[in-house]
Length: 431
View 1 (cartoon, one colour):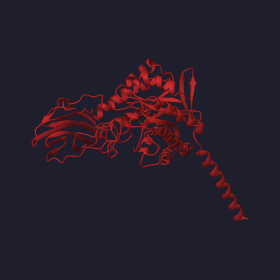
View 2 (view 1 turned 90 degrees about the vertical axis):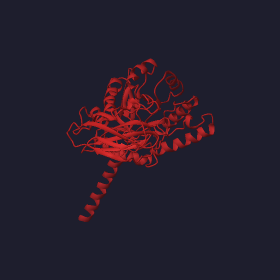
View 3 (view 1 turned 135 degrees about the horizontal axis):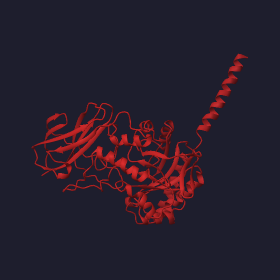
View 4 (view 1 turned 120 degrees about the horizontal axis):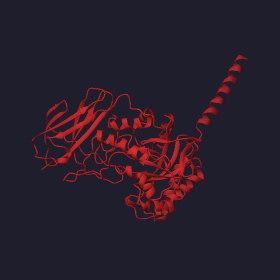
């Protein structure tokens, strides 16, 4: 009897456990509530304001630890993880995912007059949606990324709308969107006329982000929207040297602008904006290896991570990142068009302060100026590192022998004792 009793208890436990797990693994029901033009995103009938980041290969656990609730991707399979693996990782950390769907871009040669190619794309996307649609971490489908960038054929929006309708037919639980590079009257009109099936519009802006509320009204977008990329001033938006090198802001200037832009453009719109995804929760090479990622290649956090923690928690993290006070090469800043002669001595100096009085260590790196220049965040290769003769390296001072003729950048990484870093660089030309 005791054995039978044990078997019965085990059977009940397994059945209850199986039912509980089955309930947990149900897809989330995602909707938008419209109260007289004021929109709210809801997940399982509970309000959900997106506090998130763009995340390709970045640290999902760090995102959860900073109290974000969501992240976005650009494709269902990033080459390292399948879409299911990404969603499983998100689910394990209590995060939702706006899942990107790769859509052909006209600027990369996709022809939307080619009906066969358009149908093959449609079929491929349908298979991706069928595979992932019931995952409990799924939030929104993002159909394509910046399809308006350098495009001329409006049929792309017909294809997006057809995909959106297909998604709604086979997946009644999740919303659809598409992301725009900036926002102009032309794009708003095209989306209104050709993409009526989309649930929400997504917009990506950088230095111009504070103008977004005005542009939303000016161009007549009255529906809900998400800011799916925002962050550092774009490499196309900054001054350049005489030889065409864009001048990157240091990590401290970037962080201040992150907070200012968020407050002026995203936090102020309580009516139409459903939240945002900051760019980029991780590290990537785009013009430089430090421009857009708010982490270093080693996974160290910059001041911009501090800012996002503050935005998501209304308080600063316990340990703050180092701050750049000044950075000079031969007494000049990046804005002074620094030109040097080869095989001569050059001296760089940086002043950094740490809010927690942590000990700072410095790492210096000379790279060739990038020549692998792409558009729209396409993959770029990091320039080669130049091994220079170091004459002095002590407490924020770095003296080195200049390399051969060419365009270069001097990078410095100021690390504290708690996995935080400040970054900055200066472009220079060897004549």
